[in-house]
Image: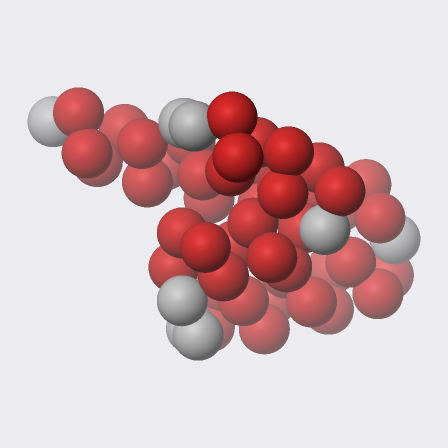
Amino acid sequence: MSLINIVASILLPPLGVFMNMGISQALVINILLTLLGWLPGVIHALWIASKKAEEANV
């Protein structure tokens, strides 16, 4: 995970997901989670970023 992805995932969770996945179902889910509360959106965004980084290392 790059520093830019981590900062984007914490400050604006949908931006972090968009940077990793583009326009996808994960982005819609993250937007809904962020509207329900900032923390669920951050957790989801960081999970997506770590999952993407793990796929890149394999």
